[in-house]
Length: 412
Image (cartoon, rainbow, N blue to C red; front, top):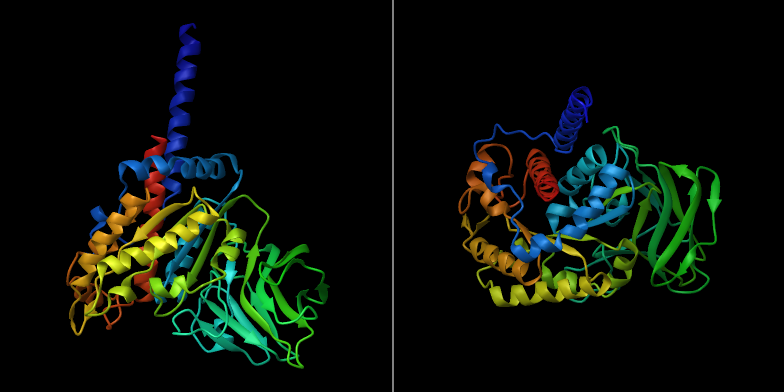
């Protein structure tokens, strides 16, 4: 190679390297680093030797999405009230949509919380008709079966319907082309159908256990689910509605039930059936604060319950990766909860046993008693358990960046 060609090749290599670095930086979400109560050096994803090796196939798929716009990755975030409220999980979903998917996203699993008298995410809107009752996995003896949403809405009203509006003010295209209605009909004469404006989409594929799949004739940002055959003793048990686009990217699924513990999710007998639709490549666990918010916390029982849940997920996808979010610092009987540290050790053990990773929110906050500083900073509510909207957005950004940071380490 002559000198001129060498110089040109060197310039091209430097430019390519600069472009790669610029792309790497663009993958991160911008976070507010002005809060002195946040220990940013603890916000990296904590991995162990087996977990680092197990993450390689996941990062290869993520690399395909980012650099070749090919393939789909499904991440399921499951927990309690931190997830049901939606701000935490939506922040992560939004970051993947903005920084990885090219301003496109899938709403994935949605539920009509409003129709059954409880709070839900604010990033999509729900309305409906008819009378609905609810069954949640926190109940001692649930009346109806539940799946990956952890909650079931039941109706027998002949005029029952549920309408979803997917758009929001974040500039992301949430258009859907594929819809699953997760639910169980009491009779073969009962079946759901989808309305897009004045167009009825009938004849779904599926059965009473796995849900009803609709391929839409065109993309839409709002739709209504209605039902044939209700009334006269016939009912429909709705476990949620899934809305997906047909584009490559990361699809972020979220399931939360206020007050849910490990035992709550073990009550979901249809969990595996619903997970076969979601096919999670990664599960982010945010379960544990309700287990440990008691004077009688049993760490061995807590670990055993968690392992049962992990084994059920592995039966759907043996190669699924796991991230364990430790319990945030909180108060029990007006004092810092000592069980939070004990639970943190269990999460590390579970990660070691299952080749998983840990995102240590407990240490990000500053450890025992740190919730007081977060309350004073406006990041946590006065109950010292739940975060404010600003707090949920912050920890959503930090967790997302922790995943991206680990991916970039793998690339290096």
